[in-house]
Length: 367
Ligand code: NAD
Ligand code: GLY
Image (cartoon, rainbow, N blue to C red):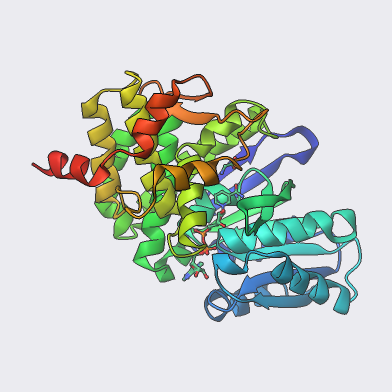
């Protein structure tokens, strides 16, 4: 087992990473203070992992809330089901909320923990690659609004994150690929040598090699922990973690939540950020094409939806959380491994990126 520490003074916490950690009662017990525990999961994850987790918590009074599965249920209405479960079973302020599932469950359970009686203990047990390398770490919690993704929420750090890499054995291949988009992101924003490592290990990752998966998760979590420790509430460098997300969120919202997976939208959005970085003269065509090849090897889309116009993108991007005083800011690359957050770019360059022919770019790359 590897342990990474997220260093946030009194809100610091460990991330435990390894195979079969869901058999380790001691790891969870160390972070549960009171008698009551509420497990929040969904109807897909529950049949695989709920009984095992309940067995580990045999000494606690456990309430289980099983939510419907899907990004389209990341709403106020679903959040209310968590509060119904907590209040219905009379959970007090000493309770511990455990999120068992992917990023949707983690974000909603975390927001519920932040709000319930103004804040109770919270533990993340992420079961998708995306949630293991990104959403379970750093304390961003929340829900979607029909007008924008993740627009309602809170920063609320967990007491611990328990990553059992064996849970990935039941994850659909498409979801694994979606998680790889966020793994590749860390190489792009701050760890260029990681891109070479990923090129060498992509087959092993997709074959669910537990040792290689744990190494990729550890390196990703370490990168995220460093960024979050420097800028917990995203006043600066943390925004670089959103590489590809401004374009990607526009894709997710426009296509209808859940139709494009978050990681898929991030991959196509990152291709747009690469295109714009190249147009600005900050990266070379060879660098852009190298990353596009890496996304393809991870099983990810590299062409944004062809029914989306530049106007569609602008409409959705106008509600991005990085918009400040009405000015759109984007995460771009000044080299592989060097992300910047900037609003300082000519509008024509953005327009060119929004209306570029990505299918034609892909055809050129394949020739
Ligand atoms: P998800 O939570 O929808 O999970 C993907 C699918 O896999 C779901 O159907 C889920 O039920 C299923 N699943 C989960 N674990 C499984 C397992 N072990 N075996 C079989 N099936 C399993 O999606 P996700 O990609 O994990 O997370 C995406 C969400 O995370 C989005 O809402 C996104 O906004 C959010 N997010 C948040 C942050 C953050 O910092 N808080 C960062 C990135 C993404
Ligand atoms: N996923 C972006 C962040 O945690 O800041």
